Each structure stands twice: as structure tokens, then as C-alpha cells.
Image (cartoon, rainbow over all chains, first blue to last red; front, side):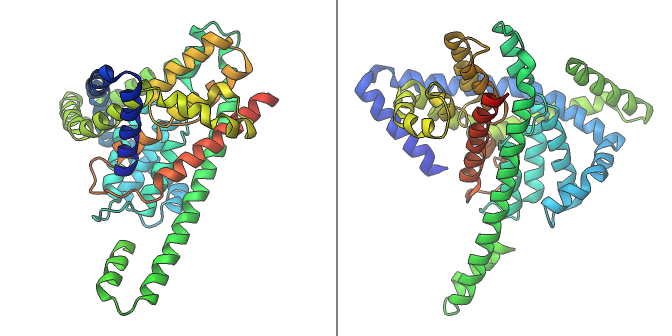
Length: 210
Length: 168
């Protein structure tokens, strides 16, 4: 993230210095203030969803949903606690129904349950992020709204193509994540065998595996 | 139909909570409180990302990169006009919606290009936003292979989107 961020900012700044140096600072401020605006909107959205979520926990709805999806989630996210699976299930359901505002706080909670305390993301955390970033929405309501507003004859025609594209990208993501998890696990095992004379290094490796 | 899902769902949850004697008001107070602390931990991440994204899209670097990438995209069956959108999509949700509206205006909302663009935006997410926000309250600093894989998966989705729009 540090590398991506730095490269992006430096490259953009060089471009701005060449084209219009006086606008650099105002662009940065406008970025920060749109973050501020977004944060205020998100406080409102999350306030409602975290409240509804609290009620769902109160009536046991999350446990019931977890039971329903457990066969799938348990297989995808091996070795995670029930609480983590509960949040994962709720996050996926919110995403499927297009409730992005509800999905984010749930996703954050799921990540908190899955973390192992190290500074490296675990394979399950990565899989979870990949599924979330390929979108698993059933009906892209925002886009349909935009198309209708732009005067489309068949605004909802994109539902089926979107669904197919989403399924393909999500499946691709899951397969890639699983393959990478497998490869890195193998490599880490190999490392700890190949480097028996470096106990400190091996210790760090094996801690990362846990 | 889908406009009823949200209010009916929330209504049913509140009703069920009332029947099960779960304190509804207390839960809303608690939820709102949690929301503020959640945003406090997320905000630094969104702020940093949005500064970079704003610089990237307003500096003109975005359209410059789009020009460089267009031969590759044409090879993959993605129309030239969608280059900028493909670059901005993983970075900024609002940015890509703005570009999408621009594409509707220049090409007509029911054109092939516009439909492709709609499906690409509808079938992907803001990868960098998910990557920063979801990990924001954990100790994780190294995302390992998370972002490359997410990007590849999204772009496979985009290529498929253009293919599907051509058939359907």
C-alpha cells in the first residue's frame, strides 16, 4: 500500500508541476474534504446499520443465517470461529442485497475476528477481501437508477450481464486466492526446511503460518 | 419490487425485536455511538486514499495512462472509450459513477459502450477502498497478494462484461 500510494502521488505531482503547478494544493484539499464529506455520510449510514445489526443479534437472526450458510462459508474459510463466520455470512448477505452501507461495518468486524495478531493478512482475510472487491451484488440498483435517469429504454437490461460478469469475476478471485494460499504455504514450508541454520528466520516464518 | 426490500426488512427486524423484548431504543443509541468510533478509525485511511485519487484523476495522469493502455485493451476486446473508467474503477466509487454518466452523455445510454461501462461498474467494487477500510481496525500492514488478485479478478470480470454485452 505504501508503495502504490507513494508512486501514485509522486507521479501525479510531477504531472501537475508540468501542467498547472498552482492547482496542486487545492486538489489535495479537495481530496481531503471529499473524504470528510464521505465520513459524515458514512456516520449516518453506519449509525442505522449498526443499530439494525444490534437488533438482528438480539433476535438471533445472525445465528439462524449462519446456520443456513455454514456449509458454504465453513468450507471457504477453513478454521475460522463461529463469530467470524457469522459476520462473514451477514456481510455476504448484505452485499448480495446491495446494502453496501451494512456490508462495510460487518466486513470490518469479520476482519477483526479473523486477524491473528501479526502484521500480515492471513489467507482467509485475503480471500474475504477478494470476494468483497469483486462485488457479489444480485441487482446493481445504483447503475439501473443512473441509466433510467439518463433516459434509457431498458434500464434494467444490464441485470443479467452484470450478474454473469460478477459471478465470473468472483469465481476467478476465489480460485486465484486459493491457489496463492496454497503456493505461499508450500513456499513457507520449503523455506523453513531449507534454512535450518537460521533459527530466528525460521521462527518468524512459522509464526506467520500460525 | 426491490425498493420494498429495505423498509420491510428493517421494519420486520424492529417488530421481531419488540416481540422478543429486545430494547430497540437502547440498540439505536448504541449503534450510533459505535458508528462514530468506527468512522474515527476509518477516516484517516479514506482521507489518505482520496487525496491520492484526487491528485491522480485531476492531474491528467489518469487520461494519459488511459491513452498508453488503450492498445492492450483493444486487444482484450474492451472499447477504447472505457480506458479511463477501468483505471478509476478500483480507486474511486464516486469517480467511476461520474465517468459513467459522462459516457452515457457522449455515446447514448443504450449504446454498446454505455452498456459495457454499466456492467463493468455494476460487477466490480472499489478495490483500494475495500483494501484500506476493511483492514483499518486490524493490526495488518501487509496485504500480501490481496490487491493484485482482486484487481485481476475485477479485470477478468470487465473483459467478460464486454464479451457478454456483445452477445446479449
